[in-house]
Image 1 (cartoon, helix red, strand yellow):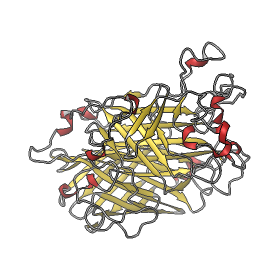
Image 2 (cartoon, rainbow, N blue to C red):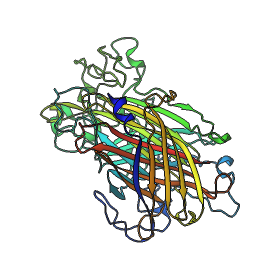
Image 3 (spheres, one colour):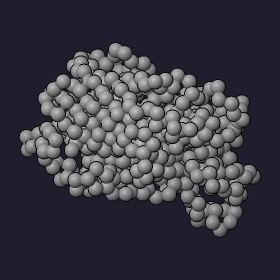
Image 4 (tube, rainbow, N blue to C red):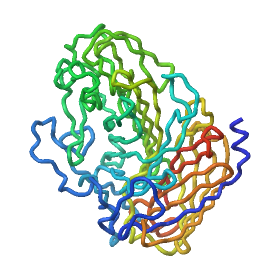
Length: 521
């Protein structure tokens, strides 16, 4: 049924706006969080916690509290620019910078929402969108595995990705907040600070935004793990962003293997061929079977079934931590594709919500899935006003075609022809599929776009509304990297963005939450 429905749609028309970004007001036709002013005409130093070296923390109290712009490594070291990143860049051409806590080896999306329109959110160095499972009106018995997908916005989605000297990602941090996740059914849960760590630790954010990797407090420290003393009034943040496994070898484990369980497998990196002329990006895969919100961490009398992205995985072995095993509270996944200056992250987080343990009424599971395009955005004043350039690459994201079923990944090829002289761009998406390397088409929509320029608003931002048949949505994109010569023309070397689409009633048709990563040809 799904294939037939999609094949009926042979083309889609979108209307884009190319906004000016920098000086002037950022308001207008926006909803949600909007910055009241932009502090600089250079997009890399917008009003955002990742803006300057003045964010350095003062006198850490211990080595484990050392602020580090790297995600896992400490202490930090500055990055080295890969010569491949400056190929075909004129000697006089300025290179853009991503002011990610003043570390050139880390690329950030930005922490502040500057504009939200059609569920497309603009940040200092990125664009993101997401959807939420179990939307209101879908019948369900609680708790159940999340189903369906409905577009949402207003939350904060931040990614920080470290790069090695060969431009490959080395590690990543996914920071999520205000997504409508509540442990007690009333207040928002503490921010998610996900570093996909394979070792036991605790992660916090300093007051000026730095990631702090700390030693995990002793599980019998009732002043920190204070649920036994305070009940539902316990400090929720103390039960978030902890990695409990693997346990120290001297810990009291119920069996010989219990201490060896891990919450996150090692991050996997697959190198692409983009540095040698191809379009295949480098790929990073990370996951975490988490225990956020579990108050049983200092108990030892409960057996809890583990949730997992793979339904075939089920662990019911009583262990330490009150019988909890990795994944008892949910899981997170993150897959990132990158070229030299831009990245596209496809993420998901499943969490338990409305837990009676924390004062909630009816426990449930909630899954939020999204995409975020980010990196080192092109200097707005350097984006050309003449010429035609071709970009091509790939589309990635989440597809929900059944409101009673699970969302699945989808993939597609994409090419974009941008005419800078008349502000038009023509998009072509093809070979859309649910298996990345299976190139049998599901549908081949032709996407036509019209761009217009407004220098009083965001520069270097392509914004549009999708209105096709009974489906509506939004799309946003940005240029990344320096201006390069060669190929199809003089223009920014890369382009990336996010998009979404759904019917007025999410249960009426399929829902897409996607993104694209493109390279100048």
